[in-house]
Length: 167
Image 1 (cartoon, one colour):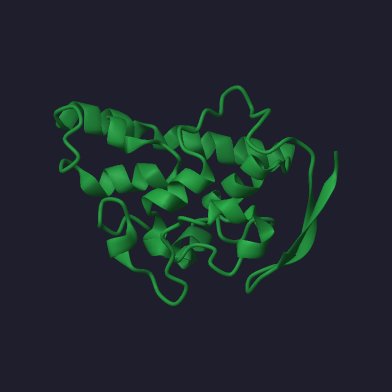
Image 2 (image 1 turned 30 degrees about the vertical axis):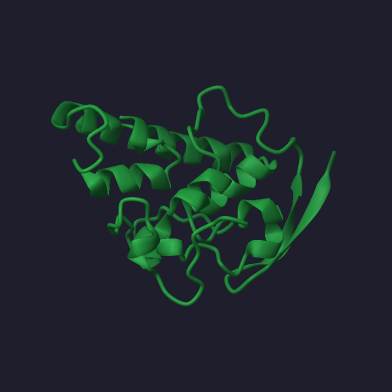
């Protein structure tokens, strides 16, 4: 099963191959709580993320997605707060790999879809695991399920496929 996916968007041209079934055969240490589709439907990245990449992924991921193709609209975020750093900041810190120029969520979408790049997958999974510290901060400082407590941190966790509504 090697299905070729063409990339043709504002930031990248090329292709990659899907070698796994969609949403299957993840690294045993990588246990995201939300799929890309669920994240997009909840409201992440002010709706602006990857709006020129819709042809790359399954159409159903975007059917109920909260998208804003022209500008970031914080009102589309689940917690109605801005919890994103500019892409330039990510690049300046060395967090962007050329294979996924939009960062972690682009990597996650492609990984979930079935692309595997062992070295990059390990790097991104390590980063995902490091974000978990924010779950502990919410548990320490908030009453359970108080979604008004630490909304920016909760939104940031949504951006990393942690379902912060359940904390």
